[in-house]
Length: 90
Image (cartoon, rainbow, N blue to C red):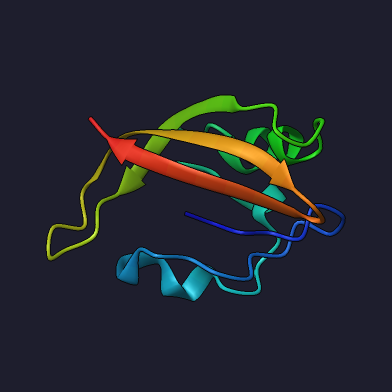
């Protein structure tokens, strides 16, 4: 999952090898294939009080050879000056 700086939204780490091109990008610009601006939701979740967990749902590509986007749920919280998230695919 993405670990953007909570202040500027820049993605500083990502675990999905199919999404490495997102490193350094402002997550607020991210849209899924349906047009949902899920990056804004992820950013907003990272602005909340530290330890508060927010669920964000969107479409995203799984790790591995299949590049077809599937439903994903991310659980996002703020830790210090980073927004941290972990997600699962449906």
